[in-house]
Image (cartoon, protein in one colour):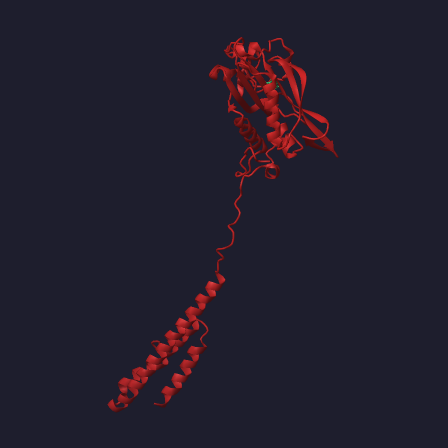
Length: 356
Ligand code: DAH
């Protein structure tokens, strides 16, 4: 049959030219579909004489098989090409770094508190705690602050509301961490070496004061502890904390809970409006301290004829500002995310004696 060679050439060309699965399916239907050209010709075989059929039959079958094979081959080639395209488009670089995840920061107060605890721990001080809502006995009386003492007014105390008929002792938001001295002595007795960092509250709000701030208390009681031990501990502390030798100056002062009492200044300089600790000939007051008053030891259940020692109290927020150059105290407590990201610390910047 003459037509066979032409059909063969025509469909092979169309198969070769089919650019996609749909076009190829069109070619298949036109050739081998129910009403396809080759299918119709095969149906004609029935009407042929046996001689004609003997000739045309194998030729048509051969054509059908050949077109069928060509269709499959083309389909496989098109599928491969499509897969290649997809692989190119969906290519993923697994060596790229992971997308950053939002991460919080450690607040400077938390960081500095940990740093301080690490330094004092190295000198044998354990951490003690007390409640932020205190009875006025722990906050004042036990610390040798009498009811009529002016210090009670100076402290600008927040008193807890009391319902009519409530005759429990008055409660206050603690105005300092000093009441933890009493609680630690009552709990542990002497000898004792503790620090007590925590929140304290005073009715005060201006550029350099917030109604809540942080203090760290220190207490060391034994049989023969003196002011000399206090001076050594504080100088060791400041030097470790600021990462360089820091001179201190002790000025005679007065606190009801210590006798004698001293305010302690650290050496600093003001250069071009910038404060630098550990150099120059300026002084900055950073804490109150002294030898624990016998009445305080008694309130803590300790015999002052047997035991003696020192105490100190220092502002944590101020120490954070000094070390990390943070200018504004009030920003500490505003929870501004930009401030926290800027001044905050990473979770892995663990405080250690060697951190600087
Ligand atoms: N509690 C005092 C205050 O808040 C600070 C202080 C002074 C604490 C002398 C002490 C100390 O332990 O000995 O102002």
